[in-house]
Length: 314
Image 1 (cartoon, rainbow, N blue to C red):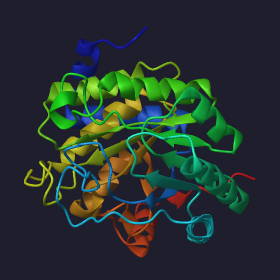
Image 2: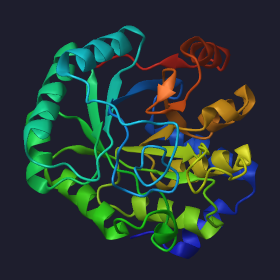
Image 3: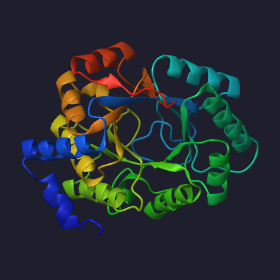
Image 4: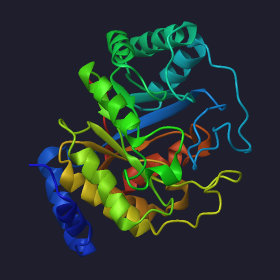
């Protein structure tokens, strides 16, 4: 049965320690308890995006410190993937700042990049805006493991964050990806001025997808000067802990990823997120255009928490 609004909100409102206890129990039942997947994210095509996402410095609608850059070539991307694997990542995520994927030379280049990354022996994930079912199928045939397309927020709050596309556009892309046999990576962002109900609705929408997403990144807003959300205050770290715990309970088998915003979290807050069901992090100094913790800091954090990194599938 699909989750109801009341069920998800009641779960979110549970006393925090009781919620963490439940999330821990669900996590231990469905995952290797002490294993964390390292993922590396590379911006292949930076800036100049036609979308008006209020949080994004890559949007052409705003004046930020991010300038449009030339698309990286296949050789450069594959070299980055090889380096990511050497550093311990098992998934290589690649971003194209596009509103949608369009057939033509740029898409053919993307397919060659996916094939090259797969030859390195690492999972390949792409985020490039909206895709058709035929495009998703071609990406799958090239070896793509996952396609990222975040819901960002609730249906009700969506228009306050993005006006150049609809919430249903987002869901349609996820459906196209699923039909093509590619796994789904989809999550959201907190700290954009949304209500608690908006947060719960975003998680409820993801949890009610059939099947549920294989990967759900939970992001904290990184305010960037020049964007409409550039002056937003930082989140309470315990709100992020609560979101991860709720995501873990609602989506037991999903890999929950502690994503953007970690540079503003203490080591203790990050450990609480890992304790509450996060079993994946983005690893490397940058997430597209925003900062991320240093690799050595992350390895030290995992060691001190008694966690180990996921090893590549043989």
